[in-house]
Image (cartoon, rainbow, N blue to C red):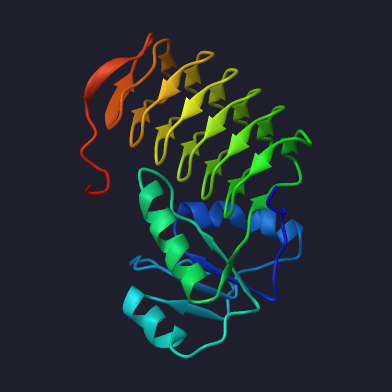
Length: 226
């Protein structure tokens, strides 16, 4: 399993919005802060970091010929941008940074859970036995991932959402806040299960479902170009 909270000397964060802000108290309890943050947001948040870069071009200029062997990174960008997280993940690794999987001290993980790289496990998330979590997944506050669930890379589970046993979720999909996915269902790649929904049947790729029971609403147009 990927080591949890295994920080190197410096911490880089790609993303300066709400996800990065929500990580601050989790990091603070570990005595960690962001050293460098990059985001193109107009209203810069005070992260008390050494450097805030305002664009990708600024980052490229700053990173040129720099040794990143002592840098960890997180990518604080929520879904539906799971595919963006994964693309940036690969890029930052290629220049020498190391992804760090961050887990709140209030989260609970069974010992046999398998975690990928660069995950973010928020307050009071619960991961049950035999769960498998891919790279760059975000498991939000108070979510429940039950036994034998398998999440591919770039998936996000919203606050207080529940995945019952043996649920399989393909890459980049998003289960909204308070949604419930019944046991042994599959959710295809690039799909969205709306907040508060109850999914009773498996969901196709690139689709949006919502309601109780959840029904197909439309194709999800916001996804990587294949």
